[in-house]
Image (tube, rainbow, N blue to C red; front, side):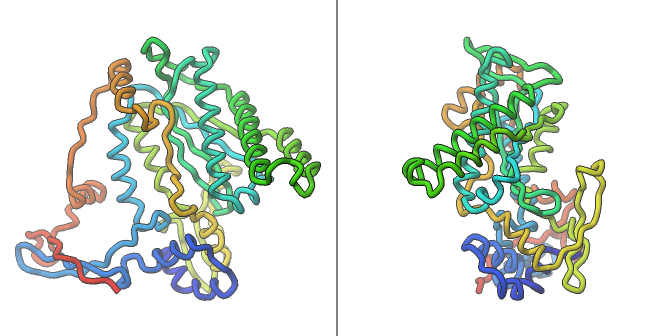
Length: 374
């Protein structure tokens, strides 16, 4: 199977001759190139029955590495199960017009922050309105910056409780098949985001009078106000288990997984993608290795930026008290966290005893102290 690491290894040096990487891009590329190689050191696994030894190289654990996200995802999901409530959940997606993409890419930390703020405030304020729900929901928001073809497409996936905590410590359920009006969400989100954007830009420059062309800036904002911003809400989940499975698909996903890469041949990378405009059909796209690497690196996030955030019932402040009350109101059974080792977790993921000795088939491989890395 062709992996992202193979593409970097064969064409990375050539790419660096034409492009200058940011610090975080260079760090991600180096980590992915080094992942599970001698560069990161290794450890010895020894059979506790026959003494057979096997050397395994260490992982890079970079959040953009396709190899390192499966286990991280499972660990995160285990921690989130304790927050689940016996209520339906909705999936709401917030996108921004293409006109804003250059501004987003050039000011990633600021713009991604505005996206989180505008989307979360939109949901919180509309849910607080008695006309729609009249309660505080729980929200988990996840940032993605890519489309299926790896083009730049910043958007926010929000998993929202179909109900919330109202005054008087009451739980209010939303309608079974309806959350919030999409058009109302879209217009409020547009107004929120553009208000925050104008404030951000004017604060940065010290007022409109310091802009090189204030009328041009106003014209751009007016154009954005006239556009329809795409916000959509998917069908509610059937139960809490499906919520967890769904969250796992989004939280630790990278721009492209290794299993989507079909071929690397004659300087061309072929990968599978889903064409949503053509009835969700799976297709194959071929790009030059240079263009493929460029598109992938566009989605490396700023250092330290939190791509998963929680609001409302799930916000960290006073969260324990709120969730204890919500569990009682929704008759949610308390999830018992089972402490299991990393090896047991991997066995559960893979569905087999992968740690069984390949030589004797009886003993298990136990890890020795690590071998020093280069």
